[in-house]
Length: 95
Image 1 (cartoon, rainbow, N blue to C red):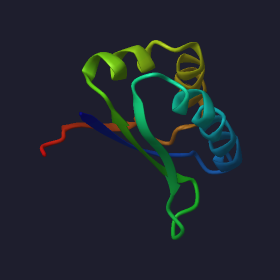
Image 2 (image 1 turned 90 degrees about the horizontal axis):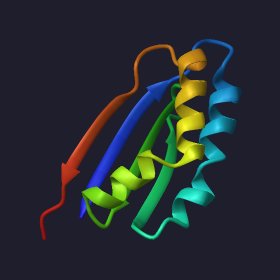
Image 3 (image 1 turned 30 degrees about the vertical axis):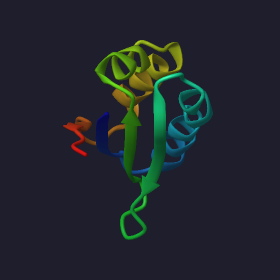
């Protein structure tokens, strides 16, 4: 299994736009064959600061996810609404 954790923060005034765009990919992502878990989290003490925790069957499934049109659309929105570059951690899960 592969786990990926993403951290990102909205520009001031762009929190709602980022939240809406991020939540829009939840259901289609969870329907992907290799998706084991996909969770969006928002920091209660810093609204507009988000984390995504994803668990995938393998690296190929994660790579396929990255190629999905709805994820590419989110990447384009990120260019306009993120306060800083997205931080990604891809982790190997050990039994």
